[in-house]
Image (cartoon, rainbow, N blue to C red; front, side):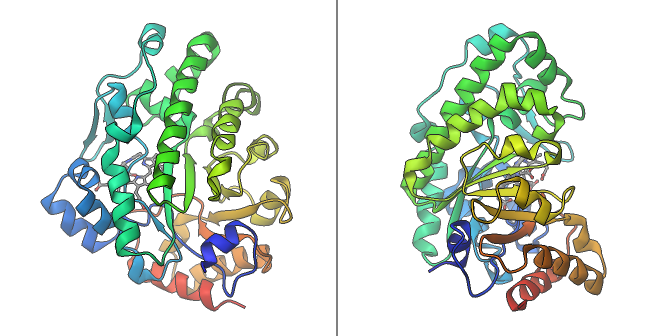
Length: 339
Ligand code: CP3
């Protein structure tokens, strides 16, 4: 039995499960050593290596593994040309700049185009059948923002301008990205993923009204289309404390929240412990505090959860590359021994 999966379904557990957003990555010396030999896309596209990276956080004592992949991989088969530029992050070489660019987009055969990811899922399950494996994908808005801006963005000017000016083109783009994401996540579960998380990292850039009108219906369709898989569905977002009442309308088992809202308040606004599980909330920067100060923050999150079934300890956003792995190890220990 798994603490993580039990908590997703709000069943009681012997201790609070814990894992970390972006736990397989650059804060680990073992990962940096691999990156000296291989570039990021090679690591991502070589199942043998991706399996190895997925397993790296295991010695930290985490209760779940997250697949080593990237939310942007599904943009590549759409012809957008994905590259990772050292020091700059991801770049789409052929961003979507006009309504015509968007009109040409069509869903594609995910199993073929992204077969290497499915191979990684099967590989992890074979090597580590005990720890649950979380599959994931980017949410349609967050993917669209990269596709349109051509990379990260501060204001999402082009993306939001398109949403306001060309709702028809926006609808088509969201429909294609939603369909690709449904196919991709269903394929991951068929390959062995035991939970799925949808990352809406940047959706907090929107107003409540725009979120509700232009994004929420697509998320509802996406999550509903995963409902028969029999695995917990996790919706992760940041900056959404202003409209959790809209987020609540997504049919998910688990909602992951950032640190800009209290855990208990967020849980209530998302439907409460009788309806959904809650994940996240610790500020990733708290890991840079002295151990006793970090411990107080961890304690605060656990006290807000108050031992109610359906709490998964995690950060409010990804772990930063400069994080000390010893702090991570301590944190896991404190969460597991908390009573
Ligand atoms: O635990 C894990 O990290 C699993 C694998 C994983 C990666 N990306 C590998 C990766 C996951 C879950 C992601 C998700 C992802 N990718 C998100 C959503 C999560 C979030 O933090 O909001 C986003 C927005 C991306 C897009 C992306 N990929 C960015 C912005 C960057 C560069 C900056 C950064 O965060 O590192 C990447 C590169 C990337 N993807 C790295 C890794 C381990 C850095 C790798 C390196 O340079 O070696």
